[in-house]
Image (cartoon, rainbow, N blue to C red):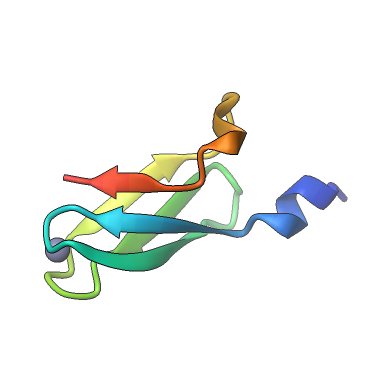
Length: 61
Ligand SMILES: [Zn+2]
């Protein structure tokens, strides 16, 4: 329905725990980006939206 949702179904992220870059994907509801650090498998969850659209890179701690 919304182009915005189609364009951004993943997020580039720097996993600070291991200094490794990866991607996390939107959940079914489109409310969170969820994923795991490729190295240590730490889970991360970031809320979608709320004006943070210009910020495409996040850090996991
Ligand atoms: Zn890690």
